[in-house]
Image 1 (cartoon, one colour):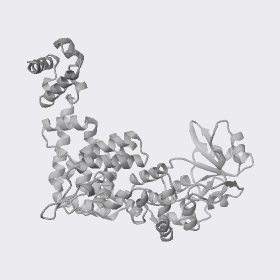
Image 2 (image 1 turned 180 degrees about the vertical axis):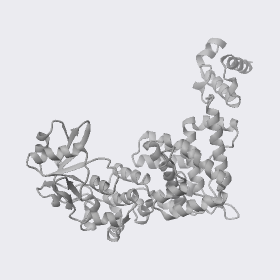
Image 3 (image 1 turned 90 degrees about the vertical axis):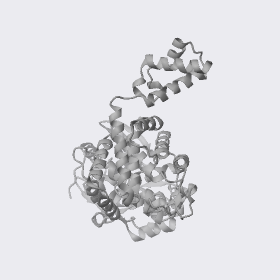
Image 4 (image 1 turned 120 degrees about the vertical axis):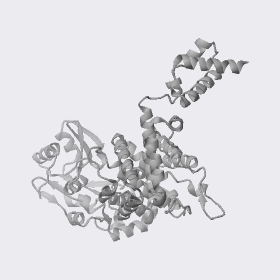
Amino acid sequence: MEMRLPRSVVEIIDRLESLGYEAYAVGGCVRDTLLGREPEDWDITTSAKPEAVKKAFDRTIDTGIEHGTVTVMKNHVGYEVTTYRIDGEYEDNRHPKQVSFTGNLVDDLERRDFTINAMAYNPKTGLVDAFDGTSDLKRRIIRCVGDPDKRFDEDALRMLRAVRFSGQLQFTIEEKTRQAIVERAEHLQNISAERIRVEMTKLLISKDSGQLREAVDTGMTAYFLPELDRMMTFEQKNPHHIYTVGEHSIVSVEIMNCFLRQKNAEAVESLTETTDRVGHDSLQERLGIIDDQIDDGTWNDMEQVIREIVPACDKKTHQVLCLTMLLHDVAKPDCATEDEQGIRHFHGHPDSGAKLAGQILRRLTFDNDTVNRVKTLIKHHDERVQPQKRQIRRAAARIGREFMPLVTLVQYADILAQNPDKAGEKLQRVTAVYRLFMEMEQSHPALTIKELAVTGRDIMTELGVKPGPQIGELLQYLLEQVLDQPEQNDRETLLSLAKAAYSDKIE
């Protein structure tokens, strides 16, 4: 079997071999290449000790020298080169007490997590697959190398990685591997929040993000996201919903991922066709049902809006949107009330949800920008702005013009994860609001005090108002006038309005 390796990787392997050492591309890069995927990075394993690797190359970084890892820099790109090693005993379900170097490649591969990640390739030797990873790739399964109990006792994070890989690759977790996860889920308590955050985020934005259900069903979320467990069993008992709070949230994440995979605005398929690549039959069936319930005009208009918004969404925004969908209804169990007909209502859940989501995201060590953006979207996800320019200007001023397209995506995903019988009019309203907002944006109306044609200094200079709270009050008053009548955002007009308001106040 022949694989094409990047030139820099071949050069590193050739250099080490010229010095009498073995060297192979290893792990995820081999797996992805065999699957026809573009590897995110290339790792190399070698019989050379770290000191020998450092001597062999001009530019190196001691990435994890105690564990045998040296980063070799080639053309401003780093390649991790790690010495064949055997891990010692694990005491904390995460780190080995010590590692020892070995001259045997198979010994090194044997310590790895899953068979599909335990393959190595060298252009001269070919593929080394001691644990039948190629068969597992063909069968599309995630299976531990050797004894799954031992693999997960060594490193509990591997359990969450198994679910993450199943989402990214659309593979099934092999039964013995899955059972070992169920029996050891509590060991995730020993894993840092930072490492859990990384794996959870990768799962959230994966092709089959619905594998979140596996994280729940195997018991893992009880130890890092117990709020989701509660949501999964909380019935909504409302005619606008057909799922529990948790299932609705996961479906909305899946749908958001359908949106965000449509990055090419010129060559985008319909949402129902996109689900062919999702790997979740129920989602494909669901979108098909929704498609049947909504007239073609409404559906096509929505898809066109998605095509316009999505190309501007970078990877960070993708994460923010998926986190928003996961947590947008997190406070519903706390806010639920039930009327005489047995219908549940969730008054105040957006504000409460934004606060609770912030606490959860900080617990999971997300950065402040992510936390603040998710909180903003959750706070405003249920606002039912009507397609009237005055209402839209006020909504944009309240939410922030940069968030308006993102709120549109959030509301689309939220609606499509609700009762399809009631989706049509809701989608039409969201689309109409977005269209009017974009039309309005062409003239860039003032939505903040900073965008007014006058400043606090103008008011002090022209009207003789002394510094103090009155300046802010007058500017806010002027903004309110401009939100109602944007054509009034003219210096002379605003000074006249401010003068009249100030005169009334001091009389």
